[in-house]
Image (tube, rainbow, N blue to C red; front, top):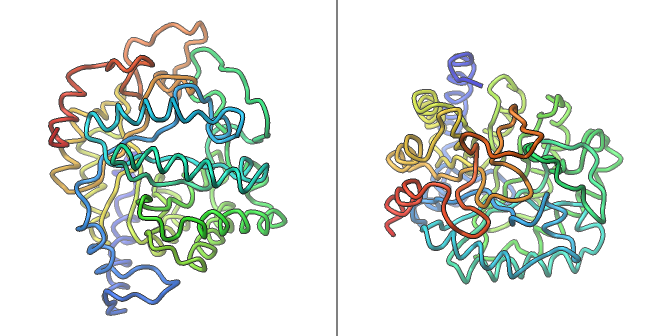
Length: 361
């Protein structure tokens, strides 16, 4: 959604957040269980190299459940693919968890998360983990996951906890237990960069009905009070209640933007009014002219973290555009997302060369 249609609401929101921060006269020692001060957030950000990476799921997993369930968790593939990430200089990856995988076997799930972190650390990658998600299929189920639908973007990706489950308060006690168990287990783990509590709240037509769970997950996370910052990314400028909550409760401002450079630049300029570090946790849709060549250098220049969607072409089918299915499974004229073929060769060598250059490789 282009920022030009919502300039006034976003300006008002960002400057209100900035004024609120000034009035609080926050210090670097923010109260435990509260949003980090602007100073603490910037101090944390300054301790990291420029952040770059991708949203990651192994090529042989159609969704988060296939990635994390015991029968299909694949450390060898993860190790191989994160080696490719290390090779182009990526130092973070955004990785989706799933509550259904935890419900099956909480202790086993946490062991697999720990194993993933060990592999990532081996490759000098500090991932961020995502808890809830309002995007794509509505009813996640344990066990064998759906088969790939040829030529259809993310045909098997699952919402978490699903729809209408995400708006039913009866589910919240179990979801709270999940969040606190996982956060508590890794609250002091230096291998983790950040906790992304909710992906695109309000998507799939849910809009403000997601505010209750969004409010809940921030409260649960603050009660655990992890060492790592917490956030939930802005993604649709017309969801004003959700946006206000996300901006006023996130330690680090994260956001999604698949627009052309001039519109993406305006988003950066407006969000900087918060005074907080910025990380773009989703970008790069080639057929919409959001590319590595025209967005990634801009993000580095602005010192905004850059995490594109898609890494290895695989079962998620994200080489296909959201709204342009090719049911015969033929190759699109141009890949929508993703960097590598399943064998590790780049889709475009010039893009990989640019990524490496920007990452100092």
